[in-house]
Image 1 (cartoon, rainbow, N blue to C red):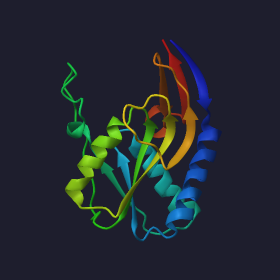
Image 2: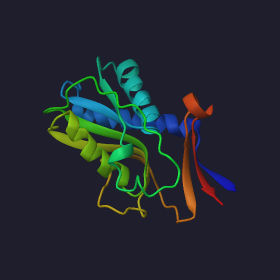
Image 3: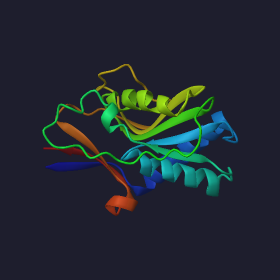
Image 4: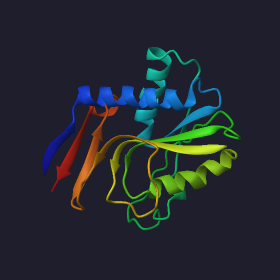
Length: 179
């Protein structure tokens, strides 16, 4: 198994700041905007963005929730291993709010399609946007595109994109993994 570094820690930090600035350009004070991290790996990116917005860019009270999509996926019964659901934590209304889904890698689009279905249980947002750290643009099964992307990656079928977060993996970095 070979890994190629796509983004090192410094580059991840630069991209996070750029994404935070793009969000501020469009949403200003976030009074009508909520961030929703897609469980499990989108939560790390969502937490980092919330922290940047509040501490570095002085946006107060950014609402952040976590959405589990496990049983909303169209492929959840197609695996032999038992699925482990994560916890959905959304302690605010999404009714008439602008929702920003946040995930680490956009691959086939199936996770986002599941998130679109799952969020309806919490109200009807006025709009939904998608922010992703990595966009694997040639791998889409569904017509879903990010509104905000950190980096576009062209990976062929046998390659995987691995995102590491310091909170879980001990380092920040993005790797292209080949078998």
